[in-house]
Length: 588
Image (tube, rainbow, N blue to C red):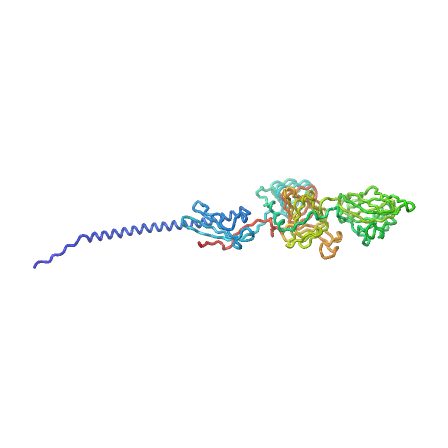
């Protein structure tokens, strides 16, 4: 038998094994490379995502910066994208700003806004949004009792406040200044409070004088300057036609110590009565009307009356007699009355004759004790009749005198409009006419535009407050800005219904109420302010240009009503992030 022969093994199996091992190693290498590439792509995408998030945040901040720098952004920018694909150096961004209430940015400054930032980097896109709520921030000038954009120059004045006085420069000569003072320059030696020099960048923020009054003109009720009366139509005399019962409040015998009989007569120049004057003790004796409630030292007055006397020859030929009109004043520091009188004013007998004159009221020393206008005939034996007396100032301009103005009451002139909004906002374009406000009670905001020279709150009591807490009482503006000047010359004498015969309380009866002479609230004057007499402000004063004065006393009792409730034009919006409103936005 032949032995079996073993088949020889093929050498290809080793090759296959080696080849398989090589393929496995190669696959492992490829897997490692793919893994690195994937990891690299993940890292790159993560970086893009993070950069896109940063770009989205940048878009939000850029939009907020625009809102801060552009006070008119609501009208300058539309609802939607404010910019698109703006480069950031590492990608781009888009800002979208919308009003979530009604989709309009411009129709309400009190609406919130939603700011959405969209960031791009590589293939990544990220979105973030924040809701911004508006908050009114008062201008820093409202932290001062007196804030002046220009200079305060005082000469023999008294400026008194319990608050802060801020101005560019403050100088005081022969004056008394009470209160804390801050200015870039302080000169003089009559400051009774702390004085601090500051740099100009530390000055308080003043209103935008070109637009601060827009709200009040747009939302206020217009008054007609030409419908206001002038002094030529006024008569301060009481019971001037003698039609009412003669009382010492209206007519008395003067001067003190003289005697005469005065009563009503049915003989008259007009109406049905006149004042009969008989049995005079001297040529200086005559009927007099007290004027101490409104007389102003040195003020010129026009005085007029009709007189009748029966002096004649045989009852047929009239005889002329001389009459005098006199103004008496006496102060607590005077040793006797101060008198200004006319020269002879001739009146023919047997007829009514008009006598008239302009007379300056004498000045007095100390507190006024009395003042009156007197009519007398130089012949003490002559009895006479007096009728239709006129007493008025010879002041120019339009006047608001012994009037009431409130949201629902406007007594400035016949047919004057009221404010249906209830806010008591009124404005008047003076057109260069002088405006004088005196002896009135105002509950509201009055914007005075284009006042003429010497426009003022005049020498006399005033009771004034805004109808809305924090709103201004008085605003003064002009088209050119440089003629928006005003003077506050109110006195500290009370506003009396009894003295003026006016129902200031609107209860239907005059004579019961007395009101303190003061202005409550904010006063804002675009250009220059001056002051006279002794005025009291319970609030604050903001002046665009200067306070320059030569005599007078002004007291400001600082009340922060406008600071706590800033009125239109005296605040700026600060937009604050609503709590928990910052969020990532899902791509649409």
